[in-house]
Length: 170
Image (cartoon, rainbow, N blue to C red; front, side, top):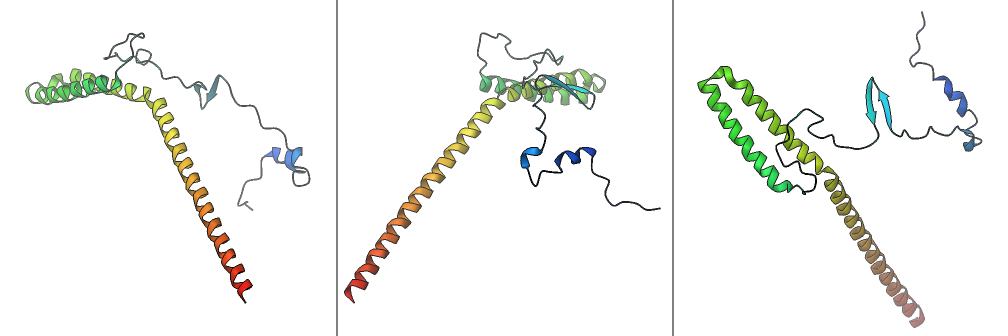
């Protein structure tokens, strides 16, 4: 019985047989997916939308009013303090009434989910700030490269001038 080290190539490789002579002979790639699609049995969308806490079945512990801008720093601090308090209460419950810990665990889980939701809503801002920082660094590096090129050009011109003076003096 003979076995192959590698499996045979997929059948669509024949579409690329003339690629070395004519690179334009290859078929166009499929268009990008827009909207919803199914992958491994799950429905996904190409829109980058953060689902609300209500959609996830989690109570929202910070203001829900869409007209008011959320003060992220204040809300994150408030949720962090609340989390610390609930963890201390959980320790007390585990010591005094160990059978009643489930409610405290659920409260802590809800606080963590609210913290994560607030942090995830800051991701677009973080991405923009990171891109701005990267672009500023690139601009700075390019300015340094231009200055280095100018400095080396002036040095080369000075050396050429010195060489011409030396040759003319002989």
